[in-house]
Amino acid sequence: MMLTAAVAIAWSAAIYRLVVSASQSRTLWRSSFTAVTITVAIASTLYDFRLAIDRYLSAPNLADLLARLTISVGAGFLLVYLHTLRSDTVPVGALVGYATVTVAVLITMSSAWLLGSFHSREIDDLLTVLSTDVAVYCLAFWSMLGVSLAAMSWTCFGRWRTAHHQDPAREVSMLLIAGAGILGLAVVVLWALSLVLTMANHAGADANAAGDRLLPVAAAMSSVGIISLLVVPYLATLHVTRMRWRALRPLWRALVERYPEVHLEAQPQGGPLTRLQFGLERMIIEIFDALRIAPVGDYPADVGKAEAIIRAIMTNPVRQANRHAADLLDHSESRDDDLDQLIALAGAFERLHHASS
Image 1 (cartoon, rainbow, N blue to C red):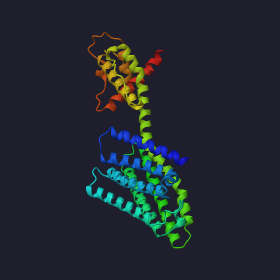
Image 2 (image 1 turned 90 degrees about the vertical axis):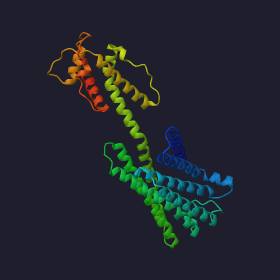
Image 3 (image 1 turned 60 degrees about the vertical axis):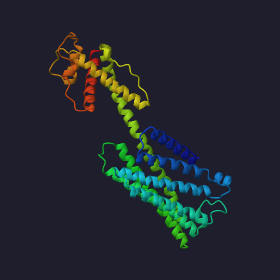
Image 4 (image 1 turned 45 degrees about the vertical axis):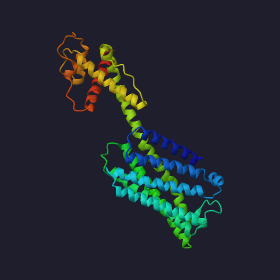
């Protein structure tokens, strides 16, 4: 049941990446990341339905081979994607190297499977039928997996160390993914150790069992890290945008009611965040437009600037006044500075409104 749920999640992620990639310009990092999600979805599907596939094809353990080959291809794309994160350009030689390693692993695994004893019956645990061909098959797959996990941990730790530490959600996600890579690498090492010990006629079951116990932990850490990386920044941006929208709304409504000519009729489109960002930007534009035409009267000098501007607006001077509210604002260098000023004005408006009611 859990594996089937994982398959559904994997396909959801793959379809999402395909849709996003189709609507954006084609880049190496975007294409390689999309390929990783697709291969994970295909491999998890093959593994979940391996018995049914093998019965349909009358080929025991074929679906397991196809799943491992697909994961190996995904690991190759993952190496390319991680390289794009570490540098702006990926040399052609590096791409050829990744492709060569991936093809070599695929050929090695396929040859070991074809020449080995994989075809007589379904095998749940390859260590129970250990032989040279099984060892080559497993070690080739684990080597590819281990290299990609090590590269993933190294890259995520490197990006975390060089981050400006202004995005806690992204930092935690990077640490979780890096930690999951290290645990996954430990799992691969334990499995390989179990194989070597068994080949040497020693007890390797304990090492294999330890790897099996660590695997769910590594998978859970990786899932939480990846989901956090994709979802948390979106939710955080949505929350911050909504808080800003709510802070500006009372002042915006008051100014638009007083100066309806500044109101824009454009309708937002897109998802929740896009619509909210559109609404916030429209609020900012309309507030500034209203401040540019709002005449101001005299105001007391012993209050804060934001409160003074609001009081000056609310004194209802004649429309032909030579001074307007926008003239009293500080010069800003960025949109964030503009927004900070407007939020301060909105706060002053709320305080004066409550005091007068």
